[in-house]
Image (cartoon, rainbow, N blue to C red; front, side, top):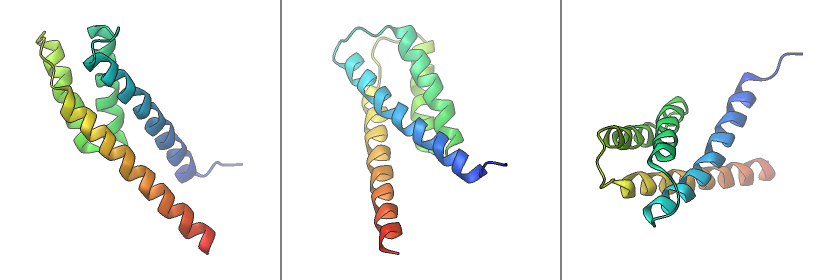
Amino acid sequence: MTADPEAAIEALKQRFLARCETDLVRLQDYADGGQISNEELYYLVHRLSGAAGVFGFDAISALAGELEVVLLEGRTVLPLQPLMGGLKDMLEREADLGSAASRTSSAG
């Protein structure tokens, strides 16, 4: 039996979005002076940059990529707010889309 490719991609996208929620918490923790190393932060933004692009979230990919470069350059002042704001907006939009799709499918 062959799995539905669209369903598989949607499942991966949902896992990505769930991970973004965790990433947003980690970014906020870092911004608040929490215990996340620059190495962990680099891994987070590197992964986010690639995965966001795969799922068509180009703005998030670009923001994460810019932060990745800043980390590689060793700068100590990190522009976290644009990425954090972009993640919040993306997650809210996706939640709204999910709610609208759910209402549409239950109405039909």
